[in-house]
Amino acid sequence: MRLLCVLLPHFPLNCEILRRRDMNHRRAAVIRPNDGTAGSRVVLDFSPELKGLQTGMPLQQVLSLHADIALLDADFLYYRAVFDEMLDALGNKSPLVEGTELGTAYIGLDGLHGIYPDDKDLVISVKEAVPDSFATRLGIAGNKFLAYLAAVLQLAGRL
Figure 1 (cartoon, rainbow, N blue to C red):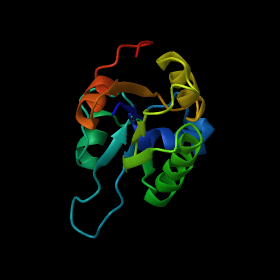
Figure 2: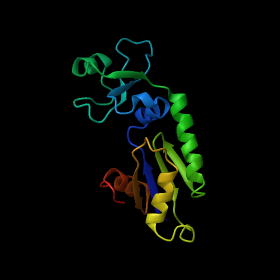
Figure 3: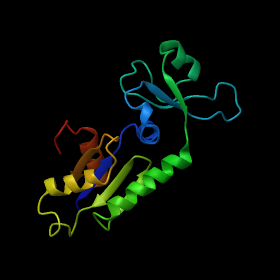
């Protein structure tokens, strides 16, 4: 069975850009809400151009590196709703769609050669199902692990 991995890097940040168009091209960090423990506000996601940041970094450390960034509180219900909409749109491209975690989905390709004569047609169709604000990485392989690796390692503009 061949699978297509649809990988959407920086999913929470791109959801916020989708919701708040004024955030496009602004340096920002999505912060996990406070759970009541000291120091629990940590980075969930961030603009790729922000050097020195990593997921899980405490908010105070983030601000010491980048005091001028926009801080956005994570909204997991919204992210789930956006992802579910994308899964529905992908389901219109293939009946075999599985969302494993926010920002990662797999599409079964068996039996689709009649609809999509080659992989290029499929890629175009899949990219149409994802909002433009999301950078989409795609990888095709014989199992989930290899399809995921192919998506992670995808070179710009190539499948």
